[in-house]
Length: 150
Image (tube, rainbow, N blue to C red):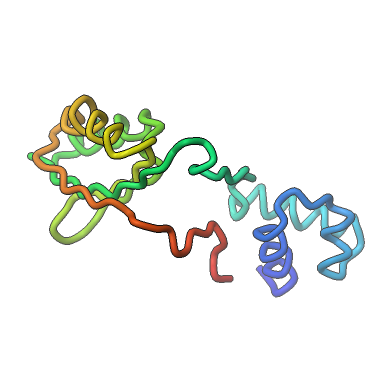
C-alpha cells in the first residue's frame, strides 16, 4: 500500500459515494488506474464495505447504552454461543471481547431507558452464560466517527 492508496482511502472515508471519475480527479489519477486501485483495495479486504450512516435520534433511538458483560464460564463453545447470540440482536450495534474486569463490552441503541430496561430483562440477561451486566448510559455524543486515522 502506497501513499496514493492511502489518499484514495482517506477520500473514500469522507465521500464513500463518490463516483470513480470524481475520486480519480480528487486524488490526481486518471479514471482507469483509480478504478483498478479501488478494486484491488476491495479485493484485498482493506475496503470491507460501504455504509450509510443514519441519525439515530431522528429515527427515535434516543438511548445509547454501554453494557459490560461478565460470563459464568469461558470455554470455546460458550464464547461462540454468546457471540452468535449477540450478532443476531439488532439493538447491539457493537461488541468487543475485552481484557480486564469484563468479558465483553456492548454498545446498545434503543428508543429510551424504558426500552433498554425491557431489552435487559428479556434479552441481555438470557444470552448464553451471562453472569452479570453493568450498564452505563451515554448522556451526549461528543464524537462518533467511522473514519480511521490513516
